Image 1 (cartoon, helix red, strand yellow):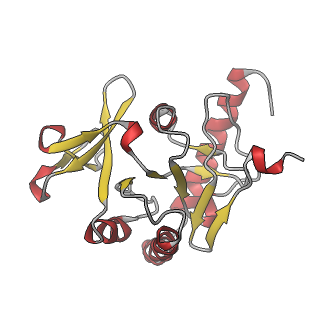
Image 2: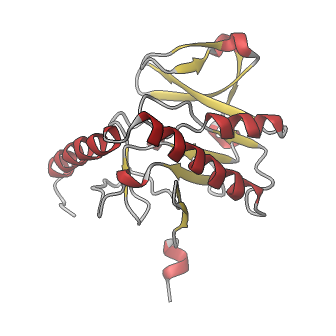
Image 3: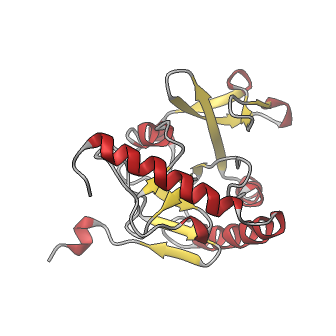
Length: 207
């Protein structure tokens, strides 16, 4: 991995372009089918003992061509869990907002539906038990490449150490090695249409 920060960012830009092209290569029908499989694997994951007590979940609403987890979000809400969604604010700040009813939604800065903060409950990162993280690209060590704004890295920095983190993506978004900086947060679980990958933590790999 290059030590020079500018070189890493140039690599990220190239990898982002490659992964976006791969994601765009999927047809609308393929995205719907693969998103359904991802939701099914997320359902299985959250039914397991480790996630069973995750009562507050920070999820997302998909951008065009992203893995769509809306059906899983509805399932979480129907099961009585509190589900928050991102609100993007100036200065690269992201808040976790729980909408109070259907009328609490608005069109966000990136054209994505997001909760209206004035009609939502705003949660602190420390109040979140689990986070479902979207990405542009990922690798098998848990590195992720987003759209470059750093919203999730800044948010996850303030979550509790025990907060459960899951990355959702299509198989085609996997790269051999995603360029990463020290501020980039590794995500220990990856869910794609093929299933769930549980990564080993650094502690687990120590002799």
